[in-house]
Length: 201
Ligand SMILES: CC(C)(COP(=O)(O)OP(=O)(O)OC[C@H]1O[C@@H](n2cnc3c(N)ncnc32)[C@H](O)[C@@H]1OP(=O)(O)O)[C@@H](O)C(=O)NCCC(=O)NCCS
Image 1 (tube, rainbow, N blue to C red):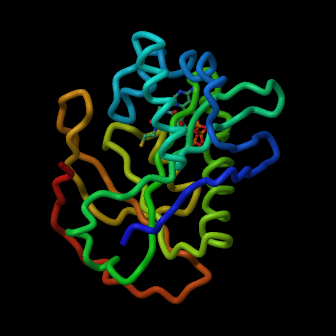
Image 2: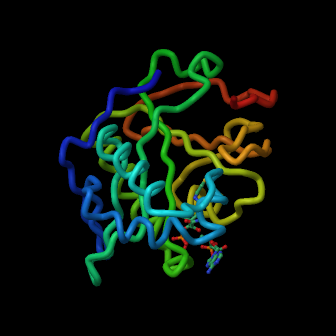
């Protein structure tokens, strides 16, 4: 089942990064990376064509209180986001009924790709969710074409769990993979034999 989760002002720090809740003053940094074509598209959303769009999403981030802003310590700029989302298909993934979990979703400014930044952020958030929030499992998905996201998830310990077909927010339908990571501090036994493809509506 989906765990209850709110950031509640939480800050997580890593060697190069500060992860903290978004603020309205982040709009310029957010627009700067979200308006670049080919970034959001890899995660299933269209790049922002104007600041009104960014403002709308930013307000959602703030009110829903489940998405970390990724701040580069060196510059103080917000260079990405990491969301602790509710996972979909709760009714179909019945093997998780007795366990508490969430789904991670992330995006990084294109100028910062290839430096291991997202894995650094994701690993720190995994530690926070497993050690401090006591979650049992995390899922994370990617479209088949998104090798970059696949690599980040592999490097953070996620392993393929189910094949999926997902409807994107840009009107396409993409095959993909749902990855799973169990809390290693708990004795969780699930059946891993699920050959069927799930459709993510
Ligand atoms: C996915 C994403 C967050 C990865 O972040 P990152 O910090 O660049 O990740 P890494 O530095 O660990 O690189 C991951 C892989 O990307 C590839 N890569 C490296 N530099 C790259 C570059 N400049 N351009 C494209 N791919 C690159 C490499 O294959 C690398 O794997 P490796 O570690 O085995 O070499 C980032 O690419 C991104 O924001 N993409 C767009 C949004 C997205 O896809 N979100 C996830 C949705 S599921």
